[in-house]
Image 1 (cartoon, helix red, strand yellow):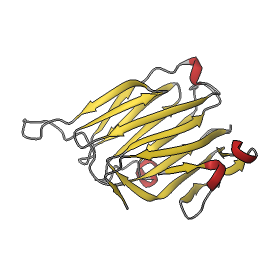
Image 2 (cartoon, one colour):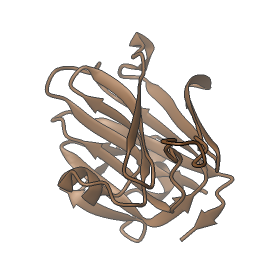
Image 3 (cartoon, one colour):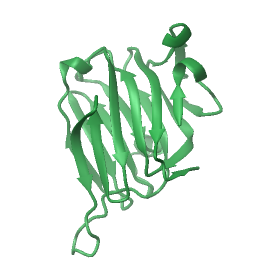
Image 4 (tube, one colour):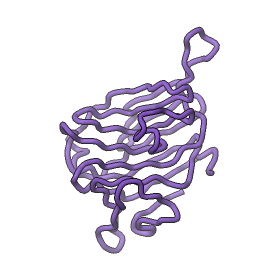
Length: 192
């Protein structure tokens, strides 16, 4: 599946606006979805998929910033409670840039990522490959983190890979113009 902003714009059959309504900016094949203190989630739910976000984030992570994009229910983030469906998403909170994985028991597994100057105000490809027993995380084609399934038969070993379908979620809590060019989903085990 390819969600191309130049073709689909802000398609309300695909997206549910959560905070504000993202707008379409640009022209012709350069149209993008712009998030400025706005968020949206897909009606579509994905399970075990290779998901890539083509985003332009205008500034480096800075105090007071809040941005999230990936697969998670927005109610989980807003309520501060983790549902048993889990989640996988990139998170910018202040100066911290992380990838977070919530397992189906509600435990969070987080890895700090390094923000490169080349990501600032440039089209950047943020991707994760979610499989039944592992998750690989890439930025611009370079692997930057991974998570492996912990054997639940080992005493105290958490199941750290979510296994329920999840919506696509994008949030920019900053008053600037974060833009989405496309989302590409490959090898999804399920679409709901």
